[in-house]
Length: 229
Image: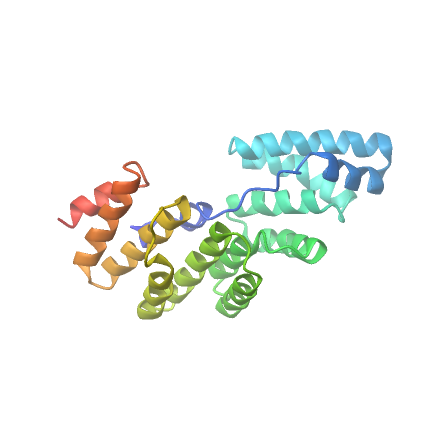
C-alpha cells in the first residue's frame, strides 16, 4: 500500500531524472567558465562519473563526487540539479531543497518541481507544495511532468486527511485515457490506493486491474487487485 511505504521509497519513484546535458557540452561550458579550462574539464569528468553512479543507484558515491564541485562552482546548474536529486534519493529533504531551489532559480525551469514539492511534502510544508503545483500546472510542461506534480499534490492532500479532494484531483486527469502511458499508470495506481483508503474497495480493485491490464508487472498492482477480490 502506498501509505505503508517508507518516505524515500514512496517519494523516490516520483523523482525526475537529471537533464540529458548532465556531464555534456552545456555542463562542461559552465564548469570551464567557473573553474578554467583544465580544472573545468576535470570537474566535468567527475560530474560524468557522478551521473553514472546516480544511474546505478550508488547515491552516496554520487554525493561524494558532486559536493566538492558544487562548492567550487555553485553557479553550475547541472551540478546543483544532480546533487539535489542525489540528496532526494538519500532522503535528505532539506539538503535536496537547497540544491534544487538553486537549480530552479538559476535555470528558471519547472523540470524538478515535483521533486521540490515532494521534499516539502516530506517536511509537512503543504503550503509550499500547493504553490509549486500551481506554478507547474500554469507552466503546462510535458504531460508526465505535470502528472508527477499532480501525484505529489494528491499525496499532500491525503497526508492532511483530505482524501475526497485528493481523489477528485486525480480522477479529473484519469478520465477518458485511450492510450495509457507510464504516467497514466502511476496516477491510476495512486488513485486506486486512495480509493482503498477511503473504503471504496470496488473501484480500487477495478483500477488496480486496469493498471495490470496495461502493464502486468507494474509495482504490486496485481497483488493489490487480488487482495481486494
